[in-house]
Length: 186
Image 1 (cartoon, rainbow, N blue to C red):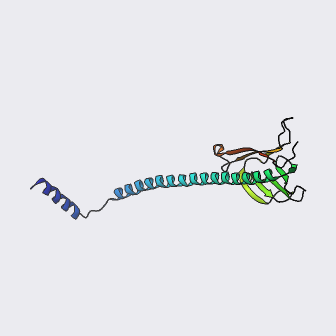
Image 2: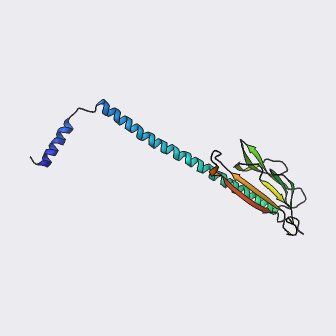
Image 3: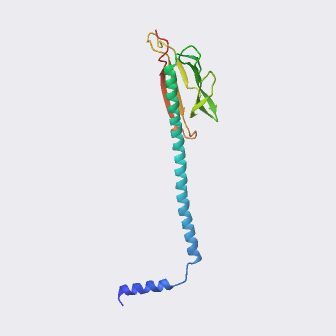
């Protein structure tokens, strides 16, 4: 016979063989399949965890920027600040007669801090940012500081956001000086 025909004949005979698989072969396939599936599942779960961390960090950063932009608008429009501490600042908005005031503050929220804006003199209201690592974010600088500079009053804001408290690397920090454009001038 021709060698190709012999090979074909052997394949035909082997396909007619109805022996099946042994128990050892079956268990070997099950164990190997299980190991492969465990690897695939662990890769999938680590991807899900990484996605959740990135999503939380992005949400925290986005909320912080939105809050800072809204705070910037309020400070630029404010005539003055009527009360200030490291954790809150109350602003007097036009018509600058004390009838329209806004308070920006931080409050503890499950071990971290949140940034709030409230139309009034109390802390609370609309939550603009979560995952702040500190509640002491405000520093007020009066006009003409340093002396003779003719500088307008300004509010220094230093906020750090960290959605994953177990990972210091994922922190995001924003530092800005917001100027009271309607503040008293010399």
